[in-house]
Each structure stands twice: as C-alpha cells, then as structure tokens.
Length: 339
Image: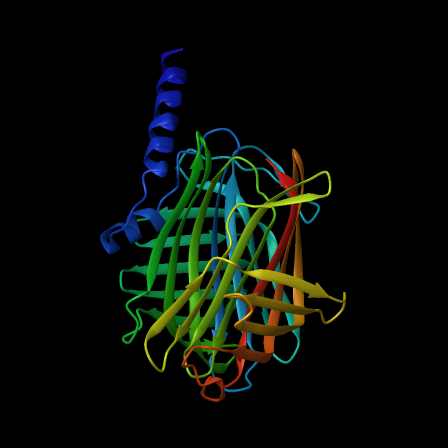
C-alpha cells in the first residue's frame, strides 16, 4: 500500500513539473534525455525530421520512437509498453525516408534505453542512436549495418534555435521541446545536409486533431504553421492558430494568428495556406506520405506528407520571394481521438 501511495505521489509531482513551462537552454538535455513518470493516459514520443536545403533536392528523413502507459496498437502491431527491471521501456520506432522514391526502412516494436547523453531505440535488427550534449548531437541509424550518420549542431546565424511549449487545462495537456538545428553527414552512402527539427512531446490525455507544417527554403528561410483543434458533431473548434515565416536574408520573423488551411484532392494533394488576411499565400503539393494508425481507447490517424512549395505570394511585406529558392518539408494531418 505504501509503495502504491509513493508511486501515485511521484506521478503527481511529475505532472506538476510538466505544467511548469521551461525556458532555458540549460534544461534541454535534462528534458530530452529522460523518461517521464507518466500518469494514466500519458504518452511520450521523440520525433526527428531532416530536410535537405539544396535547391530542388527532395530528400527527407523521418525518425520517430516512443512509449505510453499501457498497451496500444500502432499500424496493427501490438505494442506492450512496460518498464523492465533496469528502467528501460518497451515502445515503438519507425524510420522512413524519401530518396528518389519512398523507403520504409523499419517500423517495429523496440526497447528504449536512456542515460544523460544517449537515447537508444533498439531491437534485434534495427537501432536508432541519438547522442550528445547541447549544442552538438549525432544521429546514427542501423538496419543490420549503419546507413545514416548525421552531425546535428546549433545554427550560427539564427537565435531561434529552440523552444519549450506547453498547454494544460487542469491535469490534461502537453509539453514540447523543439530544436531547430543544422545537420550534415551521410544517408544511404550519399552526402546529406540541411535543416532539422528534433522534438520530444509529452501528452497527458487524448491526442486531438491537428494540422502542422514546416517548410525549409534553399536560402535558409523557414515557414511553419500549427492548428490543433477539437472536432465533434461536424463542428470544428481551433485550440490554436499560428503561422510563422522566418526570412533568413533579413533575420526577421513574421508571426500571425489567423492561419487558414484548405486541402484539395486525395493523391498528390495540394494545400493552400494563408495568413495575415491573405497577404501570405502558399500553395503546397505533396509527393510522398506515411500513415500511422493508433488504437487504444479510440482510434487516431496521423499522416506525414512530404511536400514542396509550388507557389508563394507575400504582399505588404518587404520579402523577395525570388530569393527563397525551392521549398521542401513536411506537413501533417491528424484526426480522430486516442487516449
């Protein structure tokens, strides 16, 4: 009884700590390289997305691993999320990339091991290794043998290289740490260099629907948007509406809260994104995708689309769109509910 009480207190204290918004770069590693003491309906996932900034280079690499409280199904695979006697956790991992065509490299159950400067997601054939300390990290991927080796470093010309975000209503919500870094190295025996997005997400409660996107231009400029929402009885309620554009030429960020998102078609979809009363207009075309279906209490579908900019229009702002170059990145469409 005493042990159960202590566990409950520990989980409660962990939840209180998650609700406190962090802000210092000194807190990045301690947040990233740890397991959270998750309460009921808790989940934690690590996401890593890499996109080339070479003009017209469509290559992208996507890495994900994580765990939850209790068992769940991901893409029809039963994942028994539990902790072993050494403190390691059972979870799920996936790696896929686009290199002239889509390659699903692996997608399977795994064991996740963490210490102060390393995370390993591993099974008999496959391994994800993320290691280092702020502000320099490395990612090594193995499928029988190593096929990816990337060095991940803080950008020299952009102060907006990390952020903490959280949103809680009572004891339900989420906490996120994002790193916006540069990378270079080897993928499939070829040089691979560009911008990356490294993230840890802790969710207490249900996954809710969202739209999200991040596009990297060949001149280093970045566009991203985010719209989480609640859907019920045919109605949609936006929890947040955010559009950001970083102009690398001028080291200036534009931020608006009136993003509008429209999707056209099913195969090779086109998405229209507008903001600032239509003065920012972007047309995005998808060229590859991967679908994740989560099942536990409820069903949740999360789709990653690789995409490129086909048209961009910016009015009433001093931005020369001709200097942006080509734009490639990831957009996400998530719907359903999942506890």
